[in-house]
Length: 287
Image (cartoon, rainbow, N blue to C red):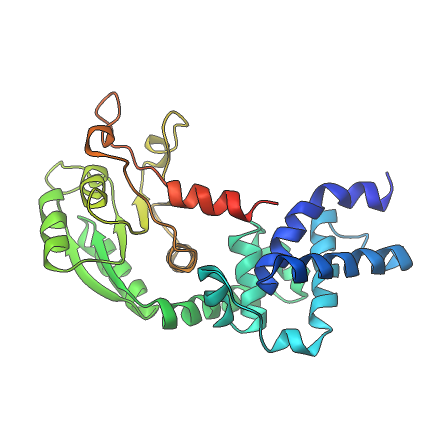
């Protein structure tokens, strides 16, 4: 199979990445064309030892980083683009490679020609820079004191504020009435046997905001039988995973919602969280 046939299926995704990086479809597509012209002129410049998709993105960023202007600024347009403007170049690249393109840390290390530890540092730096402009109040719904303390420390470490910590459905609703949060971190099973899902659905009937579920039972949410949460963390969690998802949720302005009170519960009484804004954002990002 020729190089062209090998990389052709990856081009729509590279265009998506290029548009996110440049803040412009026209500019992003121009850079993709420049990379393809480079590969046509010198096929040997493609790193054959690497997976094709990894190699393609590495070639793209070689071209991108070779232009000094790209190390200084981009042209912001959308909310995500305005957020990108606040992230310095290498952290921006690492963040997009992870959050938009779904590359693993070792793959990003190959693409950026650095170590896995450096990738982790770059993504953390991106999260910190995002937090500087998206700082918000976070409601933590969690009944285990040690876990809630860990989450509180992680949230504050990113520059956000904790508006409250709730152990039950009732406490969660009370906290929202005291102070409107900009983000919710929620466990599913709460102290009094109540449901974090039900608490979130009640909150979302009146507010549009991002929600991240943290649970030891992800299979109960990821059934494929009803709309599923956009952001889900499995216990026991890695601190870097929490940091990354908090940054992603606020960066992309990904709001969850329930369409109306009558549909807040599924057919069997299970709560239904509908990530419509996330789905729309994903569709918009696709070529």
